Length: 380
View (cartoon, rainbow, N blue to C red):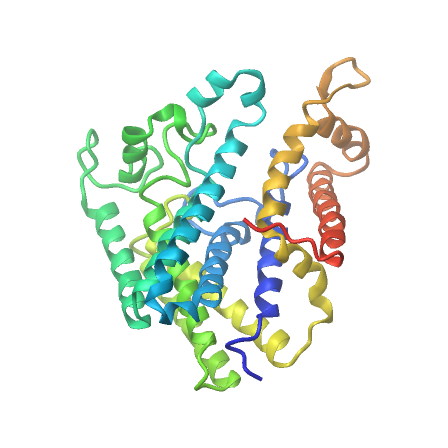
């Protein structure tokens, strides 16, 4: 079986499972009542929820290696590929901005643009995708590995040794670290994450190590595509590399704490190592041993991943534009009304919140399953 030219079902499965998890954790019924594993770490540390985004960037990297791997050998095609990647990156970035602007862009467009949050999840995916694509096309596997290591070391040096202007010393606190200062200086507070205002979890400087996460995926995809190694050897090496990366991340975390919001170098190694471990197991079970019957629901999510994520961000805001009255006469949005009416009275607070999130995922599964069965794939 030529795994280098065959589409990876395990990649679609892993992507779909990640997107489903992303929708689940982003749509609780009540942000004040969430089970601990479904919350982000307060600052330092890592919960299962903190692994979702780096897993997706890792998958983006693997996809780059598969989508561009054959064309990489023909430099005459590079310009065309890069322009196509740039177009896709612009679309992704634009979709992210639209989510930040919606629905205010239709009621108060000037104000919406004046205070739009510029960083975001889709925006970071766009930047990582484009930069990782260019680096992959123009560099060897060995050079990509060196670039990833240099990025992690340079970021560590910047964050832990460079004094923060206005503070006077390097630190890793929320509002006073170098990344937060850069975001406020370049973007201004009005264009940052509204929950924090003074810093942003998808800020400018943190995108640098996020590129290393993407390159981790690129290297994984490149390795899996090798024709001179059998599948068992690939899985053994990839699993081992993942374990080593996790250990190195934990050790580095003693000095440079694992932190998603800062996207620390230790976090890149820890999350990337776990992604490599899980992907190697998925590849071994699904693509090598052909145990794939359980994958179809997740593949449905994976084949329209960006569409699912984008609409999942749009739907709650759209529903809440429709106003409903509660029994006490208070007016609320339709999504909130549905939650308060059909979930909150019948479950404990955390279970009601979880039940709503699960229902949300199931609704998207039905939509994506119909698209999957009809072979409808929305490409960007």
